[in-house]
Image (cartoon, rainbow, N blue to C red; front, top):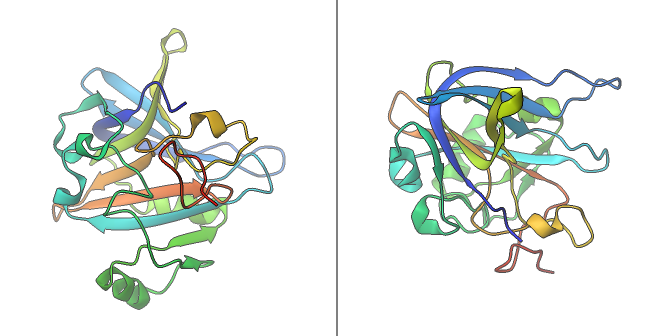
Length: 223
């Protein structure tokens, strides 16, 4: 079944850091600290998979505020979102401002001139790369002290002083038999959205290479 809770945290970016590497030098998240009226939230953005055979796909977009309403107009704090387009929830495969119909996958980030051309025709391809590539792309849209929105599943470990948002990645299309199959659902994808000085928003999306790019109404893969 889909997540019991899904929403967006709106606040101010206080800081960010990469995971400490494991004994093989790998790390899997970029950790964000986000300030909101009720305190500081800790958010984990996936930039790799703990399964060595599963890589990540990622992309960054710049969108007008109108494309992300009503979520970008919410006041600071955490807000639950209903699983549908009218609430401001995100779905990488259904949201008109996020979906890519080009079928293109770049193994390396394309040059800016090509990116501009793709934007002109509404193409929003995914990029394949390492955890370093994905982390670098994410960090490129992070500005300390700037407004940020974190979409995903909330968690609350207050006895340890830890409350925040995780599953900040695509949350549908996981294959049958995987431990994440039961959590597949539509309109519950996680993402990072940051406010730009020009009034537009930078958006960072990430997904695992094992996740399908076409799903049914329950978020399960389509052949």
